Length: 279
Ligand code: G3P
Ligand code: CA
Image 1 (cartoon, rainbow, N blue to C red):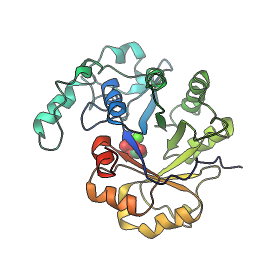
Image 2: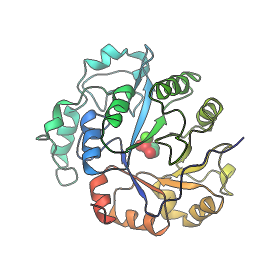
Image 3: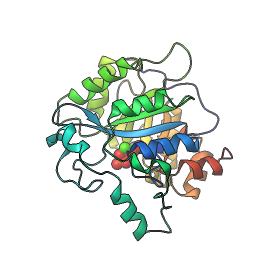
């Protein structure tokens, strides 16, 4: 199969806000994404899951227990159940325990935007951003619904005219996954949409730098970059872009920039932009 062009080569790494500006505001909330846009992030990363009644929501964990005042699996709850929960207070508590690590966001004017975020609402936010902001959408737990996550995701993207890149310029959306099968489904239904194969370790299967069929972007974790820089070069020589997560420390930002990484996915977009001389 043909591999969609990941976009023009960049001279400086793109800065991608991981779960929004998630160091400053509760991850995956409107507050976190508004802050990331305000901070100047080039792109927003989000994880998507399907609710029991078929809505795509931006939640990282299988359960809502860590990031809300509720309990249970996203896949067992309906959107109305999730809408009744508070996805912000946990962050205030976490910041109080780790004040040196996480800036306090409690006075932020967008503090109220901490209910569950649907992907649809996030797409609206991006459409209204007033400047180009790309989206890196990760399919979570894609085996649970046997193709429905990808199907609904592509239907929604189509409604926003985002299921294929424009004739010129980079695609405003890319789909990421640790699951090659999920990316294969995306590629089969939307062959021109760029896809990112996420890696937690160097898989023997892709040791030579080639990725699953149709995928043109590698998404290694920062540990791979630190411990196996030669593998990063191999991925690049094979013609792939490289997007690295989750890069929060200045020395890792420097390492990524020195290796010609295409995108830095970070919880601290403002700090990374400043370090790269773009702040
Ligand atoms: O951007 C990729 C990264 O988000 C993958 O790890 O666990 O944060 O979804 P995770
Ligand atoms: Ca993710």
